[in-house]
Image (cartoon, rainbow, N blue to C red; front, top):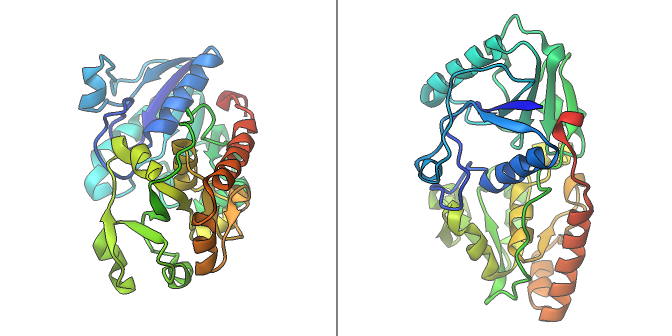
Length: 309
Protein backbone atom coordinates (compact mmCIF):
# COMPACT_ATOMS: atom_id res chain seq x y z
CA UNK A 1 0.00 0.00 0.00
CA UNK A 2 0.94 3.64 -0.38
CA UNK A 3 0.99 5.32 3.03
CA UNK A 4 0.78 9.07 3.43
CA UNK A 5 2.59 9.94 6.65
CA UNK A 6 2.34 13.24 8.53
CA UNK A 7 3.31 14.46 11.96
CA UNK A 8 0.32 16.59 12.98
CA UNK A 9 2.56 19.34 14.37
CA UNK A 10 6.29 19.70 13.82
CA UNK A 11 8.97 18.42 11.46
CA UNK A 12 10.03 14.81 11.09
CA UNK A 13 13.49 13.59 12.09
CA UNK A 14 14.94 10.30 10.87
CA UNK A 15 18.59 10.44 11.98
CA UNK A 16 20.60 9.84 15.15
CA UNK A 17 21.69 13.49 15.14
CA UNK A 18 18.37 15.16 15.94
CA UNK A 19 18.32 18.14 18.29
CA UNK A 20 16.14 18.47 21.37
CA UNK A 21 15.53 16.53 24.55
CA UNK A 22 11.78 15.87 24.42
CA UNK A 23 9.20 14.89 21.88
CA UNK A 24 11.42 13.86 18.97
CA UNK A 25 10.14 10.24 18.88
CA UNK A 26 12.98 9.33 16.51
CA UNK A 27 13.76 5.70 17.42
CA UNK A 28 10.14 4.59 17.30
CA UNK A 29 9.47 6.45 14.06
CA UNK A 30 12.43 4.73 12.43
CA UNK A 31 11.20 1.37 13.72
CA UNK A 32 7.73 2.10 12.35
CA UNK A 33 9.11 3.03 8.92
CA UNK A 34 11.15 -0.19 8.88
CA UNK A 35 7.98 -2.11 9.72
CA UNK A 36 6.18 -0.44 6.79
CA UNK A 37 9.00 -1.46 4.45
CA UNK A 38 9.08 -5.01 5.83
CA UNK A 39 5.39 -5.42 5.04
CA UNK A 40 5.83 -4.06 1.52
CA UNK A 41 4.31 -0.61 2.01
CA UNK A 42 5.63 2.61 0.46
CA UNK A 43 5.75 5.78 2.57
CA UNK A 44 5.04 9.24 1.16
CA UNK A 45 6.04 11.91 3.67
CA UNK A 46 3.49 14.74 4.04
CA UNK A 47 5.63 16.66 6.59
CA UNK A 48 8.79 18.68 6.13
CA UNK A 49 11.91 17.07 7.58
CA UNK A 50 14.43 18.44 10.08
CA UNK A 51 17.69 19.96 8.77
CA UNK A 52 19.61 16.90 10.02
CA UNK A 53 17.33 14.60 8.04
CA UNK A 54 17.46 16.78 4.92
CA UNK A 55 21.26 16.66 5.08
CA UNK A 56 20.93 12.89 4.64
CA UNK A 57 18.97 13.48 1.43
CA UNK A 58 15.51 12.79 2.86
CA UNK A 59 12.94 15.48 2.18
CA UNK A 60 9.23 15.80 2.76
CA UNK A 61 6.41 17.87 1.33
CA UNK A 62 3.13 19.22 2.65
CA UNK A 63 1.43 18.74 -0.69
CA UNK A 64 -1.15 15.97 -0.63
CA UNK A 65 -1.13 13.25 -3.26
CA UNK A 66 -3.45 10.22 -3.45
CA UNK A 67 -2.54 7.42 -1.03
CA UNK A 68 -4.30 4.32 0.25
CA UNK A 69 -4.02 5.19 3.93
CA UNK A 70 -3.20 8.41 5.75
CA UNK A 71 -1.16 7.91 8.93
CA UNK A 72 -1.01 10.85 11.33
CA UNK A 73 1.62 10.93 14.08
CA UNK A 74 0.81 12.72 17.34
CA UNK A 75 2.44 16.08 18.07
CA UNK A 76 2.14 19.36 19.96
CA UNK A 77 -1.40 20.59 20.60
CA UNK A 78 -0.67 24.23 21.53
CA UNK A 79 -2.21 26.09 18.62
CA UNK A 80 -0.41 29.30 19.54
CA UNK A 81 2.85 27.58 18.61
CA UNK A 82 1.65 24.92 16.18
CA UNK A 83 -1.41 26.53 14.60
CA UNK A 84 -0.01 26.56 11.04
CA UNK A 85 0.93 22.88 11.26
CA UNK A 86 -2.58 21.97 12.39
CA UNK A 87 -4.18 24.00 9.59
CA UNK A 88 -2.13 22.04 7.05
CA UNK A 89 -2.96 18.75 8.80
CA UNK A 90 -6.70 19.48 8.58
CA UNK A 91 -6.31 20.44 4.92
CA UNK A 92 -4.63 17.11 4.17
CA UNK A 93 -7.28 15.16 6.12
CA UNK A 94 -10.03 16.81 4.08
CA UNK A 95 -8.31 15.99 0.78
CA UNK A 96 -7.84 12.36 1.74
CA UNK A 97 -10.90 10.20 1.06
CA UNK A 98 -9.88 6.87 2.60
CA UNK A 99 -8.80 5.35 5.88
CA UNK A 100 -6.97 7.39 8.52
CA UNK A 101 -4.80 6.06 11.37
CA UNK A 102 -3.82 8.38 14.22
CA UNK A 103 -0.74 7.09 16.06
CA UNK A 104 -0.55 8.31 19.64
CA UNK A 105 2.28 7.66 22.10
CA UNK A 106 1.46 10.36 24.65
CA UNK A 107 -1.87 10.56 26.53
CA UNK A 108 -1.32 14.31 26.97
CA UNK A 109 -1.22 14.96 23.21
CA UNK A 110 -4.61 14.01 21.70
CA UNK A 111 -5.79 14.78 18.22
CA UNK A 112 -7.65 18.12 18.13
CA UNK A 113 -10.93 16.47 17.18
CA UNK A 114 -12.88 19.74 17.36
CA UNK A 115 -11.06 21.02 14.28
CA UNK A 116 -13.08 18.55 12.18
CA UNK A 117 -16.73 19.15 13.20
CA UNK A 118 -18.21 17.35 10.16
CA UNK A 119 -15.75 14.44 9.97
CA UNK A 120 -16.75 10.83 9.35
CA UNK A 121 -14.98 9.34 12.36
CA UNK A 122 -15.82 5.79 11.32
CA UNK A 123 -12.89 5.89 8.90
CA UNK A 124 -10.45 6.59 11.76
CA UNK A 125 -8.35 4.16 13.79
CA UNK A 126 -6.70 5.36 16.99
CA UNK A 127 -3.49 3.34 17.46
CA UNK A 128 -2.23 3.77 21.01
CA UNK A 129 0.83 2.37 22.76
CA UNK A 130 -1.32 1.09 25.61
CA UNK A 131 -2.52 -2.26 26.91
CA UNK A 132 -6.05 -0.88 27.45
CA UNK A 133 -6.91 0.96 24.22
CA UNK A 134 -10.52 1.66 25.21
CA UNK A 135 -9.37 3.46 28.36
CA UNK A 136 -6.79 5.33 26.28
CA UNK A 137 -9.54 6.35 23.86
CA UNK A 138 -11.52 7.73 26.79
CA UNK A 139 -8.50 9.67 28.09
CA UNK A 140 -7.86 11.12 24.63
CA UNK A 141 -11.55 12.08 24.32
CA UNK A 142 -11.82 10.48 20.88
CA UNK A 143 -15.21 10.50 19.14
CA UNK A 144 -17.35 7.40 19.68
CA UNK A 145 -17.07 6.12 16.10
CA UNK A 146 -13.25 6.04 16.19
CA UNK A 147 -11.85 2.50 16.45
CA UNK A 148 -9.17 2.15 19.16
CA UNK A 149 -6.41 -0.50 18.95
CA UNK A 150 -3.35 -1.44 20.97
CA UNK A 151 -0.21 -0.96 18.89
CA UNK A 152 3.13 -1.66 20.68
CA UNK A 153 5.52 0.93 19.26
CA UNK A 154 8.87 -0.49 20.32
CA UNK A 155 9.02 -3.35 17.84
CA UNK A 156 11.98 -3.10 15.49
CA UNK A 157 14.16 -0.83 17.62
CA UNK A 158 17.76 -2.12 17.91
CA UNK A 159 19.04 -3.26 21.30
CA UNK A 160 22.43 -2.22 22.66
CA UNK A 161 24.48 -4.77 24.59
CA UNK A 162 24.05 -4.96 28.35
CA UNK A 163 25.74 -2.08 30.16
CA UNK A 164 27.14 -2.59 33.65
CA UNK A 165 26.60 1.05 34.64
CA UNK A 166 29.60 3.03 35.88
CA UNK A 167 27.34 5.15 38.09
CA UNK A 168 26.00 2.89 40.89
CA UNK A 169 22.53 4.44 40.83
CA UNK A 170 19.18 4.33 39.06
CA UNK A 171 18.07 7.31 36.99
CA UNK A 172 14.73 8.93 36.20
CA UNK A 173 14.43 11.27 33.21
CA UNK A 174 11.46 13.61 33.07
CA UNK A 175 8.98 15.54 35.15
CA UNK A 176 7.52 14.99 38.59
CA UNK A 177 4.05 16.15 37.58
CA UNK A 178 1.37 13.58 38.39
CA UNK A 179 3.99 11.43 40.14
CA UNK A 180 4.65 13.39 43.33
CA UNK A 181 3.53 10.70 45.77
CA UNK A 182 5.98 8.23 44.23
CA UNK A 183 8.90 10.64 44.47
CA UNK A 184 8.17 11.62 48.06
CA UNK A 185 9.19 8.04 48.81
CA UNK A 186 11.75 7.22 46.11
CA UNK A 187 13.85 10.37 46.65
CA UNK A 188 14.62 9.13 50.16
CA UNK A 189 17.12 6.89 48.35
CA UNK A 190 20.59 8.27 47.67
CA UNK A 191 20.81 5.76 44.82
CA UNK A 192 18.49 7.74 42.52
CA UNK A 193 19.48 10.52 40.12
CA UNK A 194 16.96 12.86 38.51
CA UNK A 195 17.47 14.32 35.03
CA UNK A 196 15.17 17.08 33.85
CA UNK A 197 14.46 20.77 34.31
CA UNK A 198 15.39 22.08 37.74
CA UNK A 199 12.30 24.32 37.92
CA UNK A 200 10.04 21.25 37.64
CA UNK A 201 11.63 19.66 40.72
CA UNK A 202 11.95 22.69 42.97
CA UNK A 203 9.44 21.32 45.51
CA UNK A 204 11.60 18.25 46.10
CA UNK A 205 14.84 20.09 46.95
CA UNK A 206 16.87 17.53 45.02
CA UNK A 207 19.82 17.85 42.68
CA UNK A 208 18.71 17.76 39.03
CA UNK A 209 20.97 16.78 36.14
CA UNK A 210 20.23 18.38 32.75
CA UNK A 211 18.23 16.27 30.31
CA UNK A 212 20.43 14.54 27.73
CA UNK A 213 20.03 15.50 24.10
CA UNK A 214 18.05 13.05 21.99
CA UNK A 215 21.17 11.87 20.17
CA UNK A 216 23.00 11.25 23.49
CA UNK A 217 20.19 9.56 25.42
CA UNK A 218 21.37 5.98 24.94
CA UNK A 219 24.86 6.80 26.14
CA UNK A 220 23.37 8.66 29.11
CA UNK A 221 21.26 5.69 30.20
CA UNK A 222 24.21 3.33 29.71
CA UNK A 223 26.07 5.05 32.56
CA UNK A 224 23.50 3.83 35.11
CA UNK A 225 22.61 0.48 36.65
CA UNK A 226 18.86 0.88 36.19
CA UNK A 227 16.12 3.18 34.96
CA UNK A 228 13.21 4.10 37.21
CA UNK A 229 9.98 4.24 35.22
CA UNK A 230 7.35 6.13 37.21
CA UNK A 231 3.97 6.95 35.66
CA UNK A 232 1.04 9.26 36.23
CA UNK A 233 -2.60 8.17 36.51
CA UNK A 234 -3.26 8.42 32.76
CA UNK A 235 -0.43 6.00 32.01
CA UNK A 236 -1.42 3.73 34.88
CA UNK A 237 -5.14 3.54 34.05
CA UNK A 238 -4.58 2.84 30.35
CA UNK A 239 -1.56 0.54 30.71
CA UNK A 240 0.52 2.95 28.66
CA UNK A 241 3.98 1.64 27.76
CA UNK A 242 5.95 4.51 29.24
CA UNK A 243 8.64 5.56 26.80
CA UNK A 244 11.52 5.93 29.26
CA UNK A 245 11.23 2.26 30.23
CA UNK A 246 11.79 1.15 26.65
CA UNK A 247 14.47 3.74 25.87
CA UNK A 248 16.48 2.49 28.85
CA UNK A 249 15.94 -1.20 28.13
CA UNK A 250 17.09 -0.74 24.54
CA UNK A 251 20.12 1.21 25.84
CA UNK A 252 21.22 -1.90 27.74
CA UNK A 253 20.09 -1.38 31.35
CA UNK A 254 17.26 -3.00 33.35
CA UNK A 255 14.11 -1.15 34.33
CA UNK A 256 12.45 -0.85 37.73
CA UNK A 257 8.93 0.47 38.30
CA UNK A 258 6.09 0.55 40.85
CA UNK A 259 3.16 -1.84 40.54
CA UNK A 260 0.00 -0.82 38.71
CA UNK A 261 0.77 -0.18 35.05
CA UNK A 262 -0.27 -3.21 32.98
CA UNK A 263 1.94 -2.06 30.10
CA UNK A 264 5.03 -2.29 32.32
CA UNK A 265 4.34 -5.55 34.13
CA UNK A 266 7.66 -6.90 32.83
CA UNK A 267 9.69 -4.38 34.88
CA UNK A 268 11.30 -5.27 38.21
CA UNK A 269 9.05 -3.92 40.95
CA UNK A 270 9.99 -1.31 43.55
CA UNK A 271 7.74 0.04 46.28
CA UNK A 272 10.04 1.78 48.74
CA UNK A 273 13.26 3.77 48.53
CA UNK A 274 15.22 0.86 49.95
CA UNK A 275 14.05 -1.31 47.03
CA UNK A 276 16.03 0.98 44.71
CA UNK A 277 19.09 0.64 46.94
CA UNK A 278 18.83 -3.14 46.95
CA UNK A 279 18.39 -3.35 43.18
CA UNK A 280 21.35 -1.20 42.15
CA UNK A 281 23.63 -2.90 44.69
CA UNK A 282 23.03 -6.34 43.19
CA UNK A 283 26.00 -7.98 41.45
CA UNK A 284 26.48 -7.29 37.77
CA UNK A 285 25.55 -10.87 36.88
CA UNK A 286 22.16 -10.55 38.59
CA UNK A 287 21.34 -7.23 36.91
CA UNK A 288 22.43 -8.63 33.56
CA UNK A 289 20.17 -11.67 33.99
CA UNK A 290 17.22 -9.41 34.85
CA UNK A 291 17.93 -7.22 31.81
CA UNK A 292 18.12 -10.27 29.56
CA UNK A 293 14.77 -11.53 30.86
CA UNK A 294 13.18 -8.13 30.26
CA UNK A 295 14.74 -7.93 26.79
CA UNK A 296 13.50 -11.41 25.87
CA UNK A 297 9.96 -10.51 26.84
CA UNK A 298 9.94 -7.25 24.89
CA UNK A 299 11.46 -8.95 21.84
CA UNK A 300 8.68 -11.55 21.90
CA UNK A 301 6.07 -8.86 21.39
CA UNK A 302 5.31 -9.83 17.82
CA UNK A 303 5.84 -7.19 15.18
CA UNK A 304 2.43 -6.14 13.92
CA UNK A 305 1.55 -4.62 10.59
CA UNK A 306 -0.15 -1.39 11.64
CA UNK A 307 -2.35 -1.41 8.55
CA UNK A 308 -3.72 -4.84 9.47
CA UNK A 309 -5.25 -3.61 12.72
